[in-house]
Length: 96
Image (cartoon, rainbow, N blue to C red; front, top):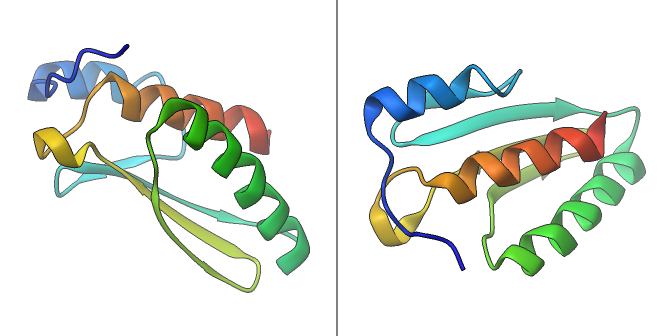
């Protein structure tokens, strides 16, 4: 079970240094991933979906052809929690 506590600005800035390719704005972290084709983008989305479901923490995302745009935040606290950074690290591991 996760502690559903919004992270402070200081905690967020510290955690941002642990993830590459993500930006912090509007109470969320964001990344855009580009793949060779739609099939590769959709395959990664499927893998992320299984991990997100296990965590019961789901990204806001959109996909256009080979590009996947992801935003993570915790709606219950209207900000960022540990869950967001954990899912970002899982996503990074899946695409690396």
